[in-house]
Image (spheres, helix red, strand yellow):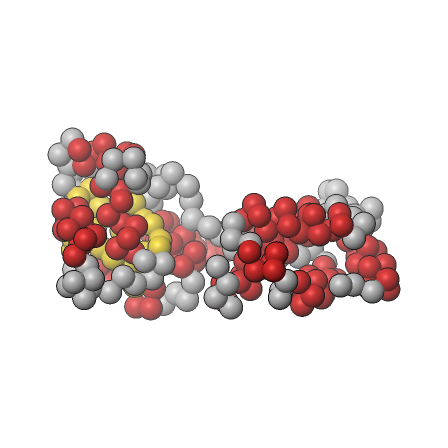
Length: 242
């Protein structure tokens, strides 16, 4: 898969002996920059999404549960996007994303299927409304970006039902330009292999990279491995590999 010269070069690039332990990583700067940008923009995003909510159908939980079984008969599109759940009694929001929103949004109103806090309040009689927003109708091109911006816009992590913040670090940020070059070379050599095509989970991708480095006697560079695993995931997504 790799020549001796390539392995020597990769080993030199991934060797961490020259890393400054007191230097703040590029990944940290990127994360902080994106977070600040999205926080500053959250009111604009809220206006955009509120405008889309007005134009879309407002569902009650019972209607979503009905559509679970009747959607195909009624020719209702199960599109890629986000869903915004609003509790009319306590004012709390929940934002989620899905490749097929109808298949995911209804689950929060089924016991042990979705967010337990939402189900508890629903079971106690609280009134909920749900809006389903297609990604294609927004100014965003990526589900993770849309979901994180929406979570901030509706303050649904700190003061809502979301248990986790949105995903900010969904792109590889390599510490050195040479790391990107190594990743490009390795991806080109592995992308058609059977093992590569079978990777479907985040942990699987990370351990695949670590095992690949170990197999060829290369430095155990976890920073590179995490970024390369993300790069693999983005490549699979772009090329419809599941």
